[in-house]
Image (cartoon, rainbow, N blue to C red; front, top):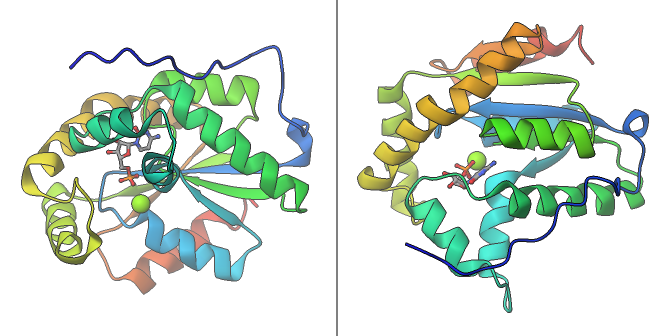
Length: 211
Ligand code: C5P
Ligand code: MG
């Protein structure tokens, strides 16, 4: 599908409304259905984090009346592909700035960066991440969770065809990003094939020396 849509410009010479030392960003990664959102919600309750889900921001933008990017986002999400970084990073930057203006400085950036270019650009023009929380989960467990969620989520991508494409994108495009951060010793890896409470205990244990 070809789309003649002009993407927002990412001006790398113009930084955000805050300096890197004023904010803390933790990237939250893992395959679809690994439980990123669930664990982020728990972290928000216990620590002073703002939870920003890249997928949620994209879905919001897709539904926003007057958005130029609605059709494009819908296409990428349905196909399990990564939306061009210009859109996602612009949404994240705006959201972090707006929260910063309200006095919030600690952010869980969930489902991002899903592709190497996003990782490099974000850390270059917004702020380097403090560390990465990686939720590791077998595909059969994620599949079961996503199909269950699909009964009520209303998401265009919680169906078997899209799920398979999302798994492929995760392995081919997102895993290299996690591996890159792991080489820099920035990854806290959590086994997600256990109860929500057990996963959360491991999360708290894993991050306690990093925050
Ligand atoms: O994280 P979540 O499962 O909500 O993401 C849903 C979809 O949003 C992804 O499969 C992908 O199409 C898109 N997305 C993206 N770039 C990101 C995060 C999500 O393109 N960084
Ligand atoms: Mg999510």
